[in-house]
Every structure is written in structure tokens, then in C-alpha cells.
Length: 606
Image (spheres, rainbow, N blue to C red):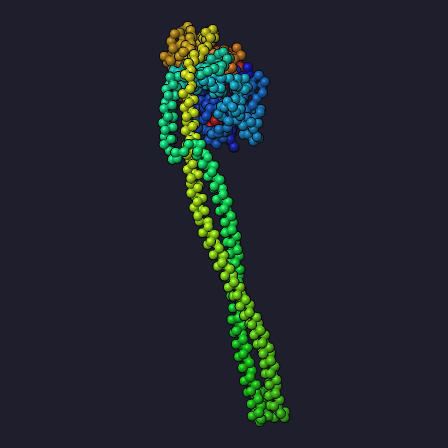
């Protein structure tokens, strides 16, 4: 089976210096003072492999994405997982990406594992490992679920708190309700065989629940029957509904015909009202013009009266004033020609006659125009009278139609209410039938026998794993005989007949680290499922203050690191406060944080 090799963990953001650590294919040690970001690296690796969230730290402000470079051991191909710091999607880029992503990803994966959909990070990684679709037990009654990559991550990425937790390393989920699942996952890794499908049993609780369901269904059937408002049977109700639908259809057709007639009448009345409005507007314009022309007529008549007065006055002036200055032009007698004043009087008469004729023509034209406008006004008033009469007839017809529609609408409402009532009763009959069918199903289900307990791990396999873990503890020079036993029922691991849960915090951490290393070694030698890498957070010490001088027996620390250095079955990443031995040789990658000789204060740039 193929495995995974972690290449690097890099955090990037716009206008930010990349924060990155390179992982050795064999052994990587990240060590130094506390509060320098070491455990954050472990959490970030887990976050990139499907964990739901990553804690927020001040140093990560301005960074937006985390990149995890991964190599497939079988093919040697490298791909990069990319996820936003608060994202719920994982993007996959082909190749080794260590800068802010500017190109489109090759794939975008969901976080949640799904047995039916493949576009999630869990199944993407399980396919590489060759274990996609494997089954594990979900409970003791042999209910199955598909393997998730998170099941494997719990056994290969060990955070500092679970490292020293008294709970067995086998029960990696940390949840009591998932003990059966945890044991089944451990069995799958040690044997390579997933759980077969089989019948599930009915527990006593389920039997009691089934009896309670039947009682509840009886009560629901009774309560539903009380809601029936019609005594007719379901068959009679359906027949009645059919007849009612036909009656409603005919009534609807009759009503539609009357409504169509009413709509046509309303349309005609609207046209008449529009025409009346237009006529009223035109009549108003005509009345305004007639009024203005009346004033003009009065002006013309007044002008004619004045012209007559001027003509009479001119005759008198020419007749009486014979000597002296000219009454018309004011010329002195010595400057007047004989008959001067008479000539002037004649000219005045000519002018008056001319102006009078002109005014009479305008007056006659005005009277003709006013007469024409009066005829138009009379015609419009006649049309409006006809329109009013027609509109009155339309309203009478509408009143008649409304009288015909009213009883039809009342009947339709009554029929519709009856139809609603019948449909509600039919729905209740259908609900009662469903409840009775469900009750019959529960009543006729035979009580299935309790299935046998899940098959355990073969004894020979358990012994081989115990021997593998024993050899690792011996290589670390842990005091004692280091004889390991595993209790399949309780999942407890004991060393020298002392359960791990009864040991001190430090020893619990060492045993957990040995278990994790033994599982990786055992599966690698037998080509069994495993991610191919392990990450151990604080297997030797839980806390160290910056620059504080700690002394710890170097034989345990030295043998621990040298044994891991010699291990070739899995990639090992150790996060620890204790400095590793200085005589470790390649292949090994060391990342000191905030300690003597360190070039960096932590994962993120200071």
C-alpha cells in the first residue's frame, strides 16, 4: 500500500513573509521554548488533513492560507493542500506550492467525509492509501460505517494533551461513545481486514422502544380519527369529491361566461367615458373661444360706432368752418388753397368709409366663425347626451349581470368550502392508513437475536504487536523489562503488568509514543494500512520556560532520538521542549525555536 510523506508546512498571506518548516522524509525534530509555535505546527498539520478548526494566534495576523506539501511514496508525485485559516474547503494543487496561490486549484474538496460523495479530503487521501471504502463497526450490534481519514489521523498525529491522557491510545477519538469504532479501526490496521456486513440485532432497549412506538401510533391513530368531521367512509368521500368537482367545473364555466360579458361591458363603458371626457375638453375649448370672440365682436361694434361719429363730425367741421386756420391740418388762411377745408373734409370721409368697410368685413367674418363654433358646441353637447344615455344603459346591464353573478359566487364559495372539508377528511384518512401500516410493520417484525460480539484481533497478531512495542521501549532504554500486554476488551495497554492509566504523566506519554511508533512500524513491515507518518507532540516533557536550564537523564532522551533516527518504516516528526542530542547525523532535520543557537523565534517571523 502507498503512504504519505509530509514535505513542508507553509503559511502565506498577501504582503507577508512566508512562514515555513521543511520536513525530513525520515526524522524531523522541532524543539525549543514553550509559546514559540511548536504545538501550533502540529495543530496546523492536523487542520490541513481535515480537522475542523485551528486555534487563532496573534502571530498569524495577516496570514490567510496554509499550504501542506505531501509526497505520494509509491509514485513520488508531490501535491499541495491549501486551506484558508478559517476555511471549510481544501484546495489541491499539483506540484510543490510554497507561495501565495494565484492559479486555479486542480481540485476543491469538502471537509466532511461522505460514503457517497468523493469530493472530500478524507476520501481523496484514503484513495492514495488504498483503503477507500473500508468498513469499521459503529456499535456492538454490527452496524457499519465507512473508514474516514480522521480515524487514521487520530492514530498518527498525537497532540500534547492526548499524549499524556490516561485514556488508552487505541481509543484515539477520545469519546466513550465511539469505543467500538476505535477498536474496529485498530483491528483494521493490525489485520488489514475491514468488518464484513452482517445482520444487526435488536437490543432490549430497541424492543422497549418498539413497544413504545406501537403505543404511540395507537394514540396518534385515535387522535387523528377524532379530527374527522364527516362520517362518510374514504370511498364515499372520494365519490362525493368527484361529483363536487364536476359541479364546480360547470359553475365555473357559467361564471366565466358572465364574467366575460361583464368585462366586455366595462370595456365599452370605459370607451364611452373616455369619449365623454374628450368631448367635454373640446366643448370647454369652444366655449372659451366663443367667449373671447364675443369680446372681439363688441370691440368691432364699438369701433364702427366711433367711425360713424367721426364721419358726422368731419362733415360738420367742413361745412361750418370756412375761414380761418384749417380745422383739419391747422394751416393759416394765407397758406390755404381755395376749397382747402372742403377737400380735407372729403379726405376724412373717404378714410372713415374705408376703415368702416374693413371693420364691417372683419365683423362679418367673426360672426360667421362664432356661428360655426356654436354649431360645433351644440353637436358636442348632443353627442354627450347620447353617450350619457348609452352609459346609463350599460350600467343597467352591469347591474343585471352582477345580480346573476352573486348567487353563482355564493354557490361556488359553498361548494369550495365543502371540497376543502372533504379533502381535509381524505387527508386524515390517508394519515390514519399510513399510521396503521407503520404499526403493522412494527408489530410483524420478529425479534432478531442479539448478534455475537465483534470478532476480536487474532491472538497471534496481538502478540506480534506487543513484541513490536516491547522492542521499541527496550531500544529507548526505559527502565524495567518493558513487557507489553494489550487487553482487547478494555483496550488497556500495560507495561510490566502495570496499566498505562495508572502510570504518571511522563510515563503515559512515553508509552503512548511507543504505541504510535509500534503501530507505524508494524503496519509498514506487513504492508498494512497506515498514513506513513507520525507526529508526536511532547512525548518526553510537557513544558519548558524560555531560556530555563532543564536537566533530564540523557540516556532516555538520547536513546529515544537515536532509535527514531534509525527507524525507516515511517516518517517521524517530533515536537519537544527538550533539545535532541547534538550527535544526531543525517538524515535528520532540526528546527530549534527560541533556544540556544536558534535562528528563529518560532514558526511565524517575529
